[in-house]
Length: 358
Image 1 (cartoon, helix red, strand yellow):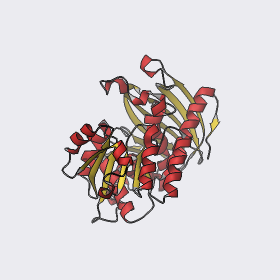
Image 2: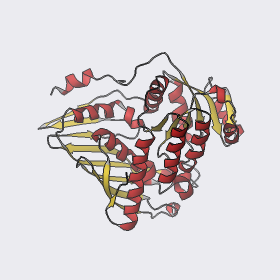
Image 3: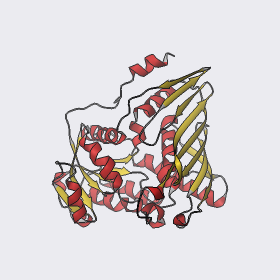
Image 4: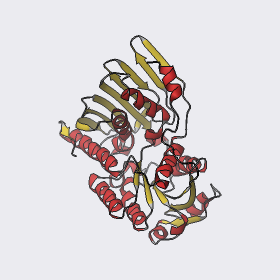
């Protein structure tokens, strides 16, 4: 296989079919991620525009509305639930704390709006199931915001695995960590409150990346998991997993070992080893993605275009949404991650192998 020739043949947006449609978004939840990552991404997108922002505070919503000249409506959560500005947007992006996703999806579904919901889909499997059910019952499209699935390096790695570059996938390693307490001046972070974050913090917020990205790359889902979790810093007293390590056995037989921590030096890597070669992505989950390929005695470090993953994700949603095509990853896809993470936390408590529910 001529890797260089193959890479040159790959188009960055192999999924795009439309160029002349625009999806109007209401952004729900105006935390740092929405303000610093999403609003600029949508502003630079080809197929999307932000027309409405929704916050707990009218004053904050009006302030954030000034970040883009397309935003004509700044409303509160209560106003959103009451149907304010419903004619101004076609779809919603939900970026509230995990345990609040359901209520905004319910209202969006009642209004007949498409839903792009941040990961993890909700705080618990049961609430995530309700979210999927309400979108299905109202026949509104639902997509879970896994930005890695539109990352060109990830898509190229998946195509290489499909083409047999590494042979049969045997084992994988994933790591994702950051120092959460250094990222915010207020130590009362919702990701450290079990009522808002769900089962925990490190696996729910960071460990989900290697789980979902491996599922995407391998086209295979988890069957069993083991885990060890622990919290040591007083700020993590309400969650079980300041530190986490977990293993996954996939349906195709691949074994993965992963770590995630909200209180460790930044690390972001994913490696898949097969019977004939290896793909190493390091860094991978932190906004940049580097692709290293090894086969036989040859290792190649590829220089790839860095993209705004959020812009790609929004444009992907819009491309599929405007053509009434199925949105993937959909709610059922997101439920598999929720069930996998629930199993990981259960395994961490019981210190035994746990089967992932279907």
